[in-house]
Image 1 (cartoon, one colour):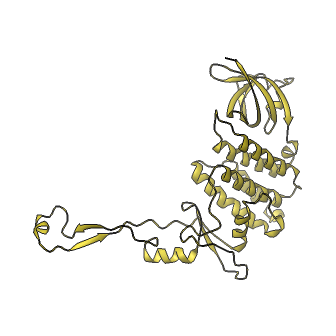
Image 2: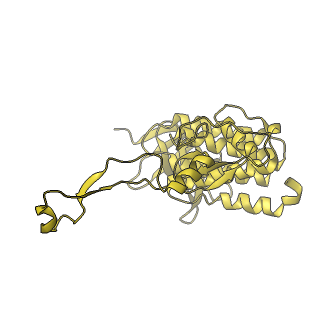
Image 3: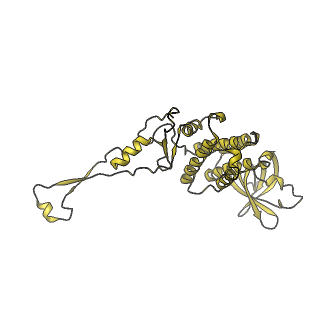
Length: 306
């Protein structure tokens, strides 16, 4: 059996290892997520120095090791230098990489994930240097990655009633709910009605028990017994956010291959990004750490961007 193998992948994470090496996490088309040593890559004159940097795509020749494999040759296929030259683009790229790391599998081909991530990184790099367009494309990328993972939130219909939801731009007070736990959008009228009734719209099959209790001999001996029906109720979903017509419209267009940047206000994109972040963190069971940098950036540059 060969002690070396070839793979094409993009570097998503790198950390110091030993005195001069790096431990690089690479998303490959052929083998999914792999962690390999880039020997001597932290030395000044190392040929692997730049090739082991973030968001560099390489054709790799890798030697198998006892615990960790090692890169023996690397030929750069593509890089994204424009991302490192713009802070908000770099942060958005790290955010997308973290989403990809959450869903990537090891020892399993990940060609679709590899292609989708590279597609969105290229879009981010080619964008004009405006924070509003970056956050819009970031939001689009997050939705598309969630869709690939089979975690698409329901945004076209109400999760409670199954009825189609259409944003009402004529009513400035119109709102729709979004529930992370329910899996998507919720009609507020239906949610309020179910909350008031204390149920979720349907009765379960009642379990008939004697009113006197199972262990009450007197009740069991009675010829005519009163029964009570115990109904099994589903919990009313918690609302994570109330969305206006513009925010729902954004959510409903994210499944498309292209987005319309001029169709919404900048702060609406931020609001949708935050709800998708909550949704992703809920399903992946971990925080998206890079998202805190997005919050910090827009908090510091609020006047300039919003």
